[in-house]
Length: 417
Image (cartoon, rainbow, N blue to C red; front, side):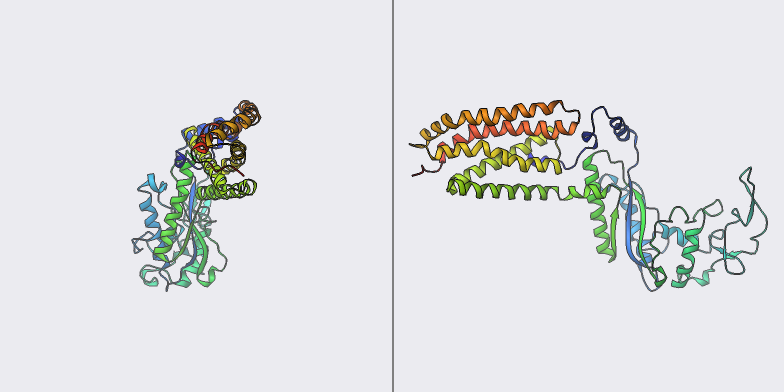
């Protein structure tokens, strides 16, 4: 059962039960039909005509079939595994369409070479402040398209053309005559620093996740996005990474199992060393170590049954539980080692001398202290402290006063001389 633990920390648990945010998260889960935005960031995009990077990214005509944007579109066809809801919005596709000769109303220039906006935008028309309409005034009748087909190489701009027209595109307002203007939609999609040298340091392509209602959805979507980016980076020989607003927090859950196992093993190792120093017996220390490991595994199984998730709080509790569980085991084991007679007699002596102390001094006192947490207003105290510590006390009691004596009677260490 311990392997069925799910990583995460439900947002509603950390809030008081009467918090107004409880209703907000309930409505978000019930009515939200789109997930958070997901950005695929491409670093060091070489837009020069000598590079294939443009065709490796775009998704319009003449682009590679396995380009980044085409692959994102394919991933959106299987949202149950990719967690991608739709194809990505691409500034590169829109820019190439915007500057093509077919889009006459988009990339235009005056006779003097300056940028000419579409006919439905000032100064090409007169804006009526009352109605908001814009009537043509003939100011842009002499505007011509930026490029002819003969000016482009296989439908793609040269390095100089790309460099000169990219600022025009990013400052162009979309309108009825040209909906591909990049201002607003792509103003923050590119890092402009040093782009004059033919390299765009970073550019983002935005899509959306499917609705993420559970913590496991967030973790799995992050893992899927990283796996996809890693594969695309390898296939295209470009540096690509994903980003979404929740990635910074949920990144911890990608390695939460590794962190938990490492911390538990280190703690068990430290307890083993201390027990060996105190008892001077590898045999007894090994038995204590095995019982402690069983207590932790059983506690993790109870967590899975109760729906308690694996996160920083529960990992700390698991590590602390080892220190608490030692009290259920070490006293009985020490009393067994100093007893007289065969194993069964020494087990009886250990239980008669230390059993009552362990039951009243450890089990009952912790039980009373834990019950108070049941009445906490915040669910996080009830789940991660009341439930976990109550389970620890009961499991520790069963292992320390029932299971451990049986083990000692069967294969306990020899009597100390």
